[in-house]
Amino acid sequence: MTREFQTIDAHAGGCPVRLVVAGGVQPTGLTMPKRQAWMARRAEALRRALVLPPRGQADLCGALLTSPVSSTADAGLLFFDADGFTALHLTAVMAIATIAAERGLIVRGDPAPGEPLTLTFDTAAGQVQARLRTGAGAGGVSGGGTRVTGVTVCGVPSFVAGGSVPVTLGSRVLRVDFAFGGAFQAMVDAESTGIPLDAAHLPELRRLAVDICEAVNGSHPPVHPTGATLNGLGGVVFTGPPEHPSAHLRTLAISSSGVVDRSASATGTAAMMAVLEAMGLLHEGDPFVHEGLLGTTLEGRIGRRLQVGEVPAFVPEIDGRAWITGDHTFVVDDADPLADGYRL
Image 1 (cartoon, helix red, strand yellow):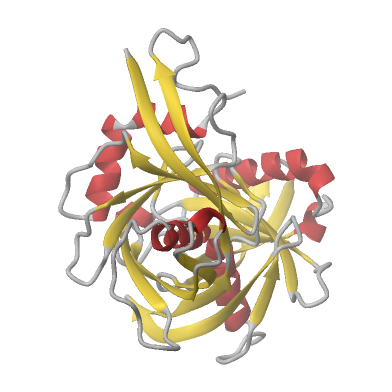
Image 2 (cartoon, helix red, strand yellow; image 1 turned 135 degrees about the horizontal axis):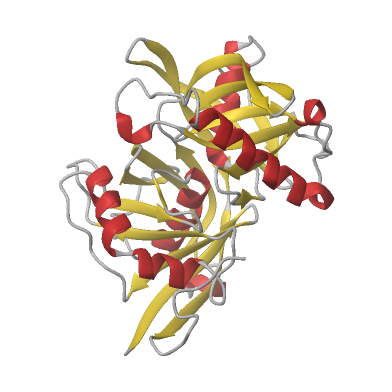
């Protein structure tokens, strides 16, 4: 048996994103967490085939558009990577919103002159919004139609979950801050680890991130105030001094399984902003320019304030841009011994 999948690929700041547009599945469930659980049970072969080699690569983010689960959303969004199915990948939202607008996947009326095109997505972590700045037909991959020149994503409520928490790794103890920006992440000063924050040391940083997540999730995993589906440490954000002249901070986000986001990571930006705000280093109205490993940047701001349970939080607003990189038809032959991909 041979299966075919059609995708549109894009990147945002160097983070590669693959949106499935044909050949996928349509998960059932009245909520996005239930649809994510459905995908984890029944779409594992799709995930592996499209994200892992030989068709994908270890740090690729896959996504699938679904019908919305709320009356205020344009679509639902499910995310997957080499590790499994994840609740939110905020950087990928920039790329998916760009694809949806430039390729007409979501039909909306034209915004008023000077106003952005706004797309709203239901995700397993909550509702997120993308405000797209557009221009008419610049040709290129959009075929003369809508051209997206910038995206502002409004994420889920972000907050600090713990400050200067000791994490024991063998004979050493690292102090980390826990913050939520769509997933719980540990903020770690790269200098305190003794590993330089650069591409040459990526394998060491990847292993350390996995070790930190295993240590935390095995002893005192962070707990979300509103629901068990978002519990547990999802990754580590290593921090260091910037190299880009306009950036305030350089970081590297790595998931609990070692998946690397080489962009500035919008989810990591949201979590980092929460930590900086709690430390009194970021104030309402201040821009926070965040640099990733590739030197690309995102700019964040503190948006609407609210409470998550009894925890003070805010909705992050993060500016970036994405580019479509290609259209693909992938063939999966069941006779192929590597049909479902592989990990080394």
